[in-house]
Length: 74
Image 1 (tube, rainbow, N blue to C red):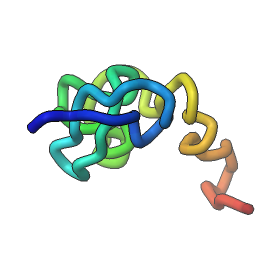
Image 2: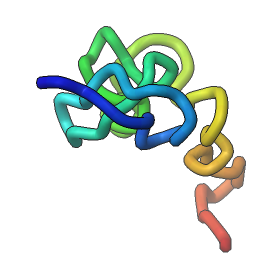
Image 3: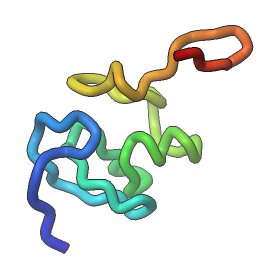
Image 4: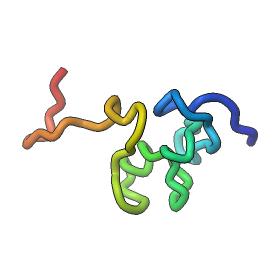
């Protein structure tokens, strides 16, 4: 499959991969080569290596706050 457009996570870098699970178009920064998934799917499934949350532009939008009871408040 041909991948064109911006990364659907950071919306800044050129997309170079598509997630095998959700189909999101993602850049190298938000791609987990080991699993073939985007970093969001890899984190949900607990697969991959190292960090479970992405870095770079857009990361603040998907990184949950640290809370003791894991409740997210808006």
